[in-house]
Image (cartoon, rainbow, N blue to C red; front, side, top):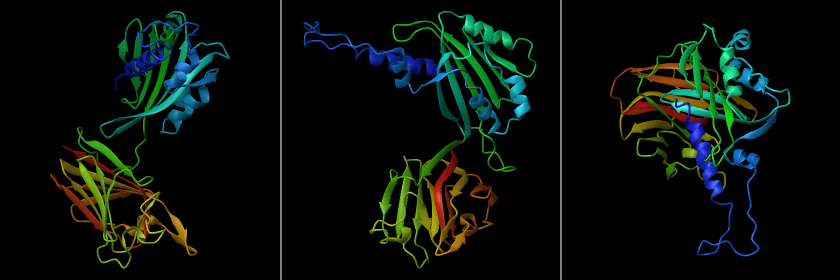
Length: 335
C-alpha cells in the first residue's frame, strides 16, 4: 500500500480546481470588470472526498478496528489520539484499498497546521512502543504496523503548496477480517474481482435460456436454464425484463458457470440474500451443492466459498437445487 498516494491525489485535484478559478478572454487577458472566484480550503478538501469534522473522531477510528476483529482493549492501548484542541477543525474520509485478494479499510484525518509540530508530537507518542514495527520514519513521514501487518498507523506532514495549505495527514488502516474461517488461502499473486447484481452494467447477453455477465476480458459469469422449468431470471415476468437486478434470482436446476478467458480460477464466492415468498422462508445458500468434484466448500449464514483443488481450472460450474437470490459473485483467480 503506497502511503503517500493520497497526497498526490489531493494535490492534483487542487491543481485542477485552481485552473477553474479564473475566467479570461480568448486571448488569455482578464476581461474588464471580472472578478476572480477563489475556492475555499473547505471546498478544495470537499472536492477530494473529505468531509468536515469538529474534534477528533475517536469513536470512528476505534470502531474501524473493532469491526474487523481487533480487540477493544488493544485498540485503546495502542491506537493513540494526537494532542489537538478539543474542537479542532478537521477533514476526514473513509476508503477501501484492494491489494491482490486483501481488502484494507482506512480512515484518514487531516489537520491543517502551519508547521511540522503536530506531526512530531504524534510520532513521539509511539517512541518505545514495542507492539509496532516501524516501516517508514523520516522528517515528514512515519508509518508503523502491528499484528503481522493487520493494523497500520501512518502520519505525514505536507508543506504548503499553490493548491493546498500545510497539513498533517493521519491514516488508520486495518485488514478486513477473514470472512470464511479455516478456508485455504489463494496464491500470493491472485486477484479478486466482483460482479454485483445491484446494477446491469456488466450484462452482455440476455435471453430466456441464458444470461451472461463479463468482467472485462478476464472472465464471464452466466446462468443457463439447464433442466429448469423456469426461464433465466424468470423472464418475461417483471414487465418482460426478468429478475437479474437488483438481486439475481436463480431457480431449481439452473446452471451457474464461471469461465476464464485468461488465467485460472482459484476460488469462487457467492454472497446470497435470504427471502420470503408466498409465506415461505428461503435460505439461499441451501440451494447450492454441499460437495462438488475437486472443490472444497466453506460458508457463513449468507455466503459460500468454493475452493478449487485442481490447478489450471478455467471453468467452474454448478447446478442449484432450489430458488435462491444473489447479491454478487466474486472470482479469485491468477493470471
